[in-house]
Amino acid sequence: MLSVLKIQNIAIIESAEIEFSRGFNVLSGETGAGKSIILDSINAVLGFRTSRELIRTGESEAQVTALFSCVGKNVEEKLKELSLPQSPDGSLLVSRVIGVDRNICKVNNALTNVTALRELGAELMSIHGQQDNRELLNNETHIGYIDAMASSESLVSEFRTVYEELVSLKTQIKRLSGDKAEKARRIDILSYQIDEIEKAEINPGEWEQLKNRRTELQNFEKIQSGLYGAYNALSGDDSFHGAVELVSGAFRELSAISQYSADAEELSKKLGDLYYELEDIADTVRSSVSDEGFSQAELENIENRINLIYNLSKKYGATEEDILNFLENAKSELNEISFSDEKLEELKIQYAETYEKAMKSAKELSDLRKKVAVDFSEKVCNELKFLDMPNVEFLVEFSEIDLCENGIDSAEFLISANVGEAPKPIAKIASGGELSRIMLALKTVMAHKDKIETMIFDEIDSGVSGRAALKVASKLKEVSDGKQVLCVTHLAQLMAYADNHYLIEKAAKNGKTYTSVTPLDYEGRKTEIARITSGGKITEIQLENAADMLKESGAIS
Image (cartoon, rainbow, N blue to C red; front, side, top):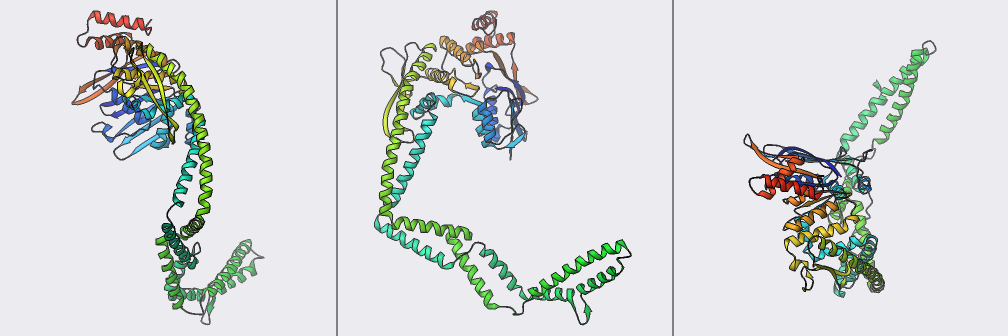
């Protein structure tokens, strides 16, 4: 769960450190006080896309740090997958620095990137807001709820593996089913390309060897002059002694006295080794001196060869290996086209067999979905009735579609909120308040399927008031049993049911705006609930009502 959130220089928050607890946590405050900034900060540390505009005016960078405690196995497995360090005590420290021209992400003080942060964040928290409600209006997302409820990951994976094979076969069949004129044109092109590359007889590494040899030939006289001078310096001539002979003489002199001096003996051995090495170098230099002279013909041949390989590289690949790979692929394609009729028949047989497997797998998945949907509908319906929708009907309507990546099912959630009305698609009849309650019902039903320990609800109370608000508060309290729930709210009922309440306030000081986050004690909670219900000046009666709400909710004994 999220234990500590530290925010620095994010928008109007200069510095804030919030300690969260397990259970039901609410954040409240006036509109514009900075509640959304806290959610933006959480999103940032979870790896979501963020803007440099978040950086507080006058500052060069912002930072968000989150400390999680007692992380689950799903998080530990993700850390291993991402090759990130784990903490022995089961805690997890995640931080992100957002600068004008840089992003620094760390997990347990190890540097990582935003992508890894986002993958890890998906295992740490789930955030539910107005975007989720909007997605609920899109029936294409509904099948995902059923699959999650059915724990059908293995069946879905098995089906999609077969389906991907089917798509690949279809693509190959389409490629080989072209008209004869197109095939003939392609055969001509491939034959020309294969012939051009094969005639060149290219070898890997040849380009570098040719360039090196060209450099040698272009500098032939300098190289030969240097080699000859070096050989004379080593071997000498009639007019002077070379280095080999001089070292040899020194070696002999020291050898003669080595029996009388240990130092002389040691130096004699070193000079002996040096003499033999110099003699070997002299022989090597001598063998490198060319007796044949400069070859203009060889240089021209090399230039022609380099130009040939260069021209081929522009057509078929930057390196010799790339060109040879192109050759193998061209041969393979030519062979495939040349025998396309036979290959086409084989692919059609494979396609028919794979289609049958895919349909069988899709049917198994469909049967499971429809079986699970009955129980799912009943549970969601029960939750909605609890959430003050007593006459609600909720069901999942399936329709068979052509085979696609989701199988053969299209699923859509239907609802009727009033007696005598037939269930209709959610998108057509659900109000804002109903949509919030439907989402909460779905999350409640699926909570036991979710391994994520921290759930954030942003404006889950949108369009809800009165008795329905009490029901929503009670349900959020229930969901927080064994989990951590964070909720941004404007409703007094939700505040009353919270285990922990945080007040977000904004103030101006020295020409700048500052936001603070304060955990409230009993008196503070009572005052904040009274403020929300009063809409103006707080009276003793409103404070008494707030105290009654806290007592009735069970949050305060």
